[in-house]
Amino acid sequence: MPSELEELVEFLHHGNTQIRQIAVKSLVSYSHSTQSPIFKSNQLTPVKDLKLLVKDYAPIAEDALTILINISTDPEILKSLAEDDAFLESVLARVTNPKDPNANLHSMLLANLAKSDSLSRLLTLKRPAISSLSSATTALDQLLDLFNAGVHGKYNPSARYEYLVYVFADLAKFPQIAAHLTTSPTPPLTLLLPHLSPASPLLLRLATASCIRNTLLALPTPTSTIPALLPILLPALLRPLIGPDPPFTDEETALLPEELQYLGPEQVRETDVRVLGEAVESLYLLVGRGEEVGKKGVKEGGAYAVLRELHLVVEDDGVRGCVERVVDVLMTEEGDEKILGKMREGEEGRVVEVGEERGEHGGGDAKLTEEVESDDEKVVEIF
Image (cartoon, rainbow, N blue to C red; front, top):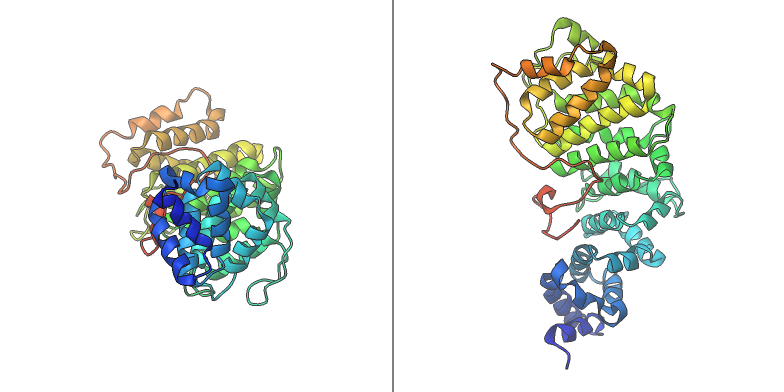
């Protein structure tokens, strides 16, 4: 005899709209990972029903999307969603619709689907140009244009599209997509850089930092791309590492990129150690994968003074260790001068700024978590 929950999922494809709405709303609370087996019954029939319900009336579609976001942590369900071409097109059509009230949820679902390698096909997936948004005819370029046009609510008043950066961050692990993100004359990656600013929401800062790191990691070595990107990336990566009224000498200040030479008391250092860690790891990749040109560019761009001051104030061991690795590479030509020892000696007697937000720093690909969700989002379980 089927349980009440098993009977409830049967109503997802009921012909009566009111019954479908009651059923899908009732199932939202059962969509956490521990309850997901109920959605895998009868060869994923409930998942197939939910795919159709995202096209239903807006309230029904909202609950169906919430469930799909939550249960897409399951590998079997993720595969069913991500490898379904018709469903992917349905999501893309709705996320790029300037009037869709659930566009944010569609972008969150795309961020989860990007955990599947099959989403790399967005790079070459052909779609009709969208007159109100983009002349591009590939899905990835349309999503890049969508993020840049819509992040401030100017494209769809109901959406901000922050989660699309997680799509870019996860897809950047593919060399062909990393190359696309760094292609001149205007590399799409550079359009994300303003969102490293502490003024941006944490979700955006973390996703942008991860996207930069993953892109640099995926580029082939040796490459001429990193030296070309260096003048653009270096200021963006150094700025969040600098605190107010930085105590640099005149000589150190003169080395910094021009836009960083006149920072005053209004300058804010990044407080989230995950963002700090990703930014410092990106500097490490610029130095290591950019070979001598990258190392010289980072060193002559004033990075050492910035890293020295960051090392004095940050308490997270992961960030400190990464800072030491970068400095070790930058200063290898100074032999046994023990530049790291000098950094540590400088800690004594200094007032240490403690980050306002603590987090565990890890070097893996970007993951979506509830703690970086914007306050005005519906609480859903994402990964």
